[in-house]
Image (cartoon, rainbow, N blue to C red; front, top):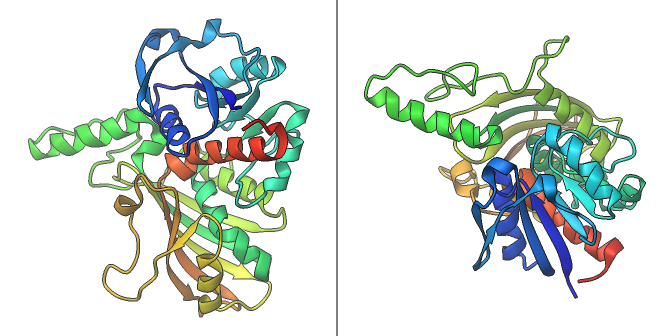
Length: 339
């Protein structure tokens, strides 16, 4: 016996990836519905070897459905998630709307699976920000061993993190430069082709951006509120795959060799760390994969108990769709127990 599953936002990058991953991982499904806004009504999307026609989310009745994966942004989520939850359908939301709500668990299954027990307060579970998700997968096993005091992270985030419009802008600008067309920023604040932009989301009063703030707050909620985090988030001219340079300071001594061994055995992590040309993973190589790749693990000689590492993951997968499906799997195993 399987589940009745809804994917809301099925025509977007993340929604399509959710459908792909549900099929790839053979999630136990008896019935599936693909929802979209009225303007996308009837658009066809793939689910394994099947083709689904999208239904209008405005008219959809969530009664009798078990799980809804939401990838529709905070505005529409605010309207539709409470309706689904009230109808008895558990919402797994990819937007930022509920991440900081104390009554909504923020889950990365490799890190804090026990937190899922709190879902019943609102019948909603939050999926973390893409840049946070891959980082905490790498941090949690190290924190369990030596307790992290402080994290300094610089991100190199792909344009797919800004949706299809972001990817299109990179493509259009790149082509245009070769025929002497002046790049015109629309989705981004500056030219993205052959450039990097140290600005993701809105600026806050302290000079940080909201993306950077998200990494701070979400890491504390998922792993440990005592961890200090400072982040610089940068958009780079890559289509898919986020990269992060992570510096970690621990309470206890932990060598790079031991950290490497711990991460090799940690769930969700794949260590590719050869000290030679090409002995590391780049965004191009992680696309379409489930793992969070970790390379360049080395001691930091400038602080006591410090290491550096390079973390790469497909942001549409572990940073969004994969993590949501993993939450659904966890929910099924621990709570709903149908499949």
